[in-house]
Image (cartoon, rainbow over all chains, first blue to last red; front, side):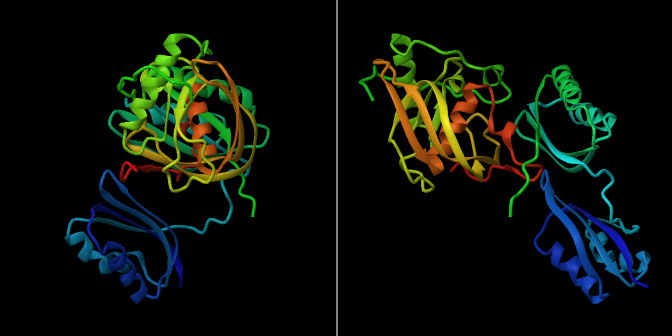
Length: 172
Length: 173
C-alpha cells in the first residue's frame, strides 16, 4: 500500500547526492512530493516526502550506501497533512543583529505565545551578523499592535533589530 | 552637481552597527561640512567595486545625505548620472517589483526585496541647496529607495520578501 514517508539526508556535500537518492526512490516506484534542500554552513541538508509502496525499513536499506559514506539518512512514515495547522494572515518577521545564543528562541517564543504558526524559516550566520526571516500564519483576531510591541521588546532585550510586516500576496 | 571639495575615502560601517539602525537627521545643504561629506561619499563609492550608492550613515554620519550612480549597472534604464542628494524624500511611487539587492554594509548576504519601479524623488543639492526633482524607474528607483531606507535606519534585510529571500553572497557584483 502506498504511504507517505519523510526522508532526511544530512552530511558532507558532494555532487550527485540528490541523483543517488531519487534514483533509489524511482527504482522503488516512489513519487517524490514536496522537498527542500539547502546547504547549511556547507553541509548538505535535504528533507523530502515521498509516496511509495515500500516499508520505511526497506527504503532505508536501499539508501544504506549513502549511510556508509557518512551521510545521515532517516526514513519515517508520516500521516497525510492536508490542512494548515493555522489558517490566517501571513506575516514576515525579519531579525538581524550581532550573533548571540537565544535570538531564534526569544523571537519565535513570542510568535508561539500568540498562536502564530511558522510556515517557513531561514536563519543565516555571516561574519558576526545573524539573520532570521520567518513567515508566520497568525490566527484570526490576533492583536497585532500587542504582538508587534512584544516582538520589539524581545528584540530590544536581545540587542537585535526586528521588523514585522504583512507578507505581500502574489497577484497572478 | 555643483563643484565639490576634494573627497576622502572613508571606511564603510557594517551591520550590526547602531548608526545603521538610527534614523538620520536633516541638515543644511549649504553647510561646508555637508559639501565635504558629499565629496567623501562619491570618492568612497567610486573606489568600492560594485557600489552604486552610499548613505551617510554607512560611513558613520547620521545625516540625510546619500550618493548614487547607477549609470554603469546592467539593470539600469533611466539614470541621472552621479549625484548626491540632501534631505531627499519620495514624492510618489508605483509599480512594485521584486529584485535582488546587496549592500556594502551587509557584505555576507543578498536579498530579494519588493520596491516601486517608478519613482519621483525630491531633494536638495549639496553646496547650492538647489531643489531637484528626479523622475526615474527600474534600477535607479530601486537604488534610491535602498538609500532612503538607510537614512530611515533600515537595511534591505528589514524588507526581504520572505524566508527564502535571503542568500549568501556569491560575488561582490
